[in-house]
Length: 270
Image (cartoon, rainbow, N blue to C red):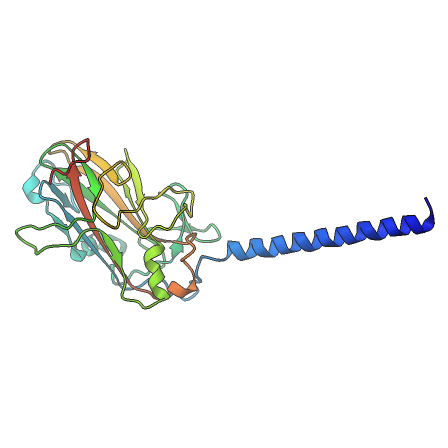
């Protein structure tokens, strides 16, 4: 091989190597960008504030923050913020005092912050967790529903929805919220306003925008007649959701949950 041929070959290899290094560098930058796209900063605990929670059930389905055994008259159709606050007193906090910071979970029970630190339930700058007991007058499958409810003590209550009065882009908070229902023998995670593919390892479901279709996706758990079942509810801001960025800090939102009983074929009982 002549000297000129060798030098030309060497220069060609160097150019290819430079292109490869540049390409890898771009990939590294893109990787860093995508890894930090979500996860808004919480250095001053400027998380999600001023949220409300309403829970209602159908006629043949009742709920309580306490286990009253088979005495169905001690259960109610509506869980109020005051009832949740009574539960939260054991954590020395309340819904008003809590601020949700972005967390994530792979299994629905253990939660961490962005860099892997453990997040504890019901702490300022963490996530909300509380327990309810559901009971029914007949065997049924309990579904999350967009249908509203009525009873003798309360006026009509709208069905399940997550809303905000915060202006855009803070209003994107309604896309970053998650709520799970853990009855030990069943676990489901509700992702309101879900957009396309899963954003985390945890599988989620959304509710239809139009008429309700009661199926396996929105079926939460089964109840035997007059047999109370403990269900743990967890509410959090999902740090891995693309909408969970600095734009939604200090947003407010309200979540209403409506539960309805169905038979095995998805036909409403209540």
